[in-house]
Length: 144
Image (cartoon, rainbow, N blue to C red; front, side):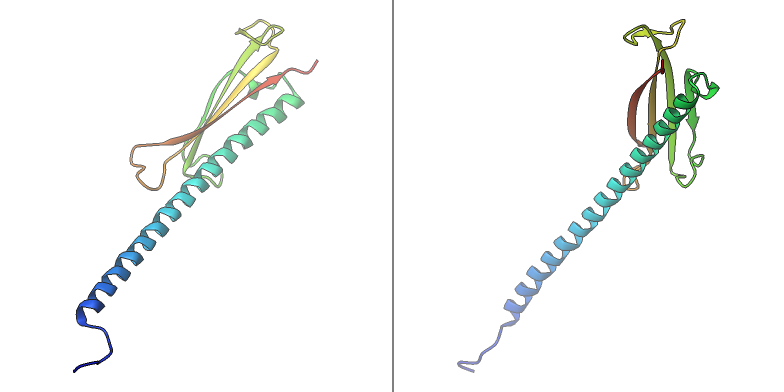
């Protein structure tokens, strides 16, 4: 059939292959994008939980600098202990400092408190045995 219009079987197979490869690339891109969004969300939640704890410690310090909950040491909240955040754990370290520049560790008179909050979480993808963490650090100074 001379002059017949249309596509040959080979042309259709090549076009289909190109389309399939393109669609697979798009699907893979969506998968990576979804994983990245979830990783960002988990990091944001961890940052919020650390900020939340620092704000709670600041509030205690403003009300009563001698509050026993501000005693130097480490407080650990295990997985499941933080309300509405069962897949996160949080550690709060409080250290006392003194002197006019808050550089003297373990002073007789506490002028400053260094508060470090670390929130750890496991990533959803590839997280077997690995934890990610967010660290926030602040210094509180006694009101005079």
